[in-house]
Length: 297
Image (cartoon, rainbow, N blue to C red; front, side, top):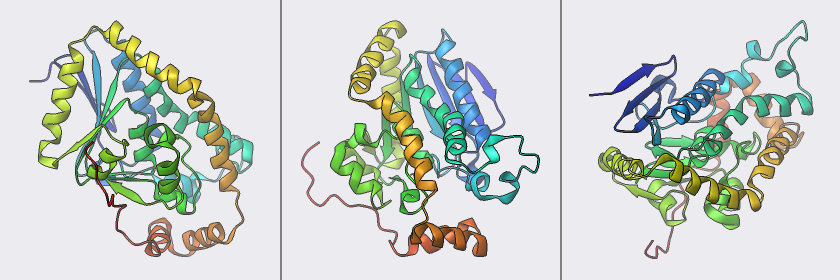
């Protein structure tokens, strides 16, 4: 039985056995990241970090998918782009306005590495685009063998603004995945270090709970020291500087006038976002990256 449970509009927050379970709860939208959901994730992480009855946090998604990406209705719905009075810069189209908007919205996901307590991502189904960014911002990731992790938006929309790819998989695999937008199965993601481990989908809950319970045994102040030491090592190799650079590089990519970007805009206007995505991805096919030679992990 839950020790403590709170339901927000787009997520649930449950505390039991010194573990906070933060669960994205938009299964009908495949847990797509709307601005409101991103804000709720940010606030839930801060609350879990503040609570003395929480030692570790599990971030999960309700339903079949962890998170299928950013809710594109907010980025391409004309109603969300219009501001007749020019009051809000988040509705404008300049480079600096785009950087400001992404820093404020997607930048809220950076609370995950910044809080003191460790965060485990539990990945089933799709973790694509913003969903992959959200997972890779976590301290540890356990995936189902058949999960799909990737960022198809790099095929024409831009580059991940929350960008931890290099720090999980190194330069070659980061380039391999970002230059194609291909996804990778959970079982193969474990072999390249993108996730800590993968297990059959039927075992995912038990595997994550076992790891969370084990981490929860340690004093939170000692756990915070371990997390911050490793994250400082990442910062010394540029992780924190890369945060802002990635946002600015993505904003620059949004201004591209290349043929791929023009085709994307035309298809969105003519057919809508969902069909434009299908048309973009049809050239690539649906098969994920496969690891041909698998050495022991």
